[in-house]
Image (cartoon, rainbow, N blue to C red; front, side):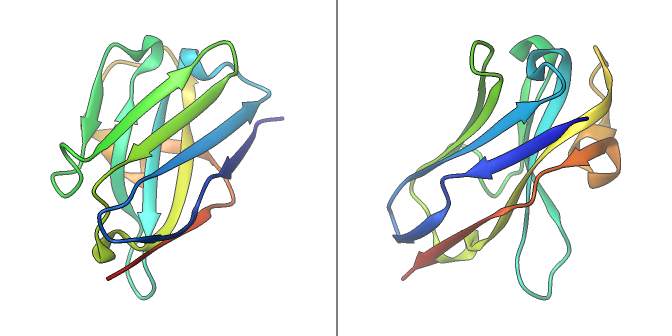
Length: 129
């Protein structure tokens, strides 16, 4: 049984930083495409970042490029999202996600929620102005 548990969210002032964690169990993070998505009230869930199996490739939404960094720790079987220079528009619930199949090549599927079969419960990030 796959479980993804996010942590690290909170309230931060604009310009501040947070690091989100996503602890996985039941599968090895490094064997799967992993992603971060976010959903603000009244909006659809949107892509933030993804990382390929083996961490060879990362992709980011234009809105977070240069400010956010996705990474993974194989020893801890954990996915991270380092968020710097936070803006009020980054306020949302952040979700981590794992692909259904292992060792997949890059495709546009990984920047959409439909590409992922397992989701965490989400962690709230609130950025005040």
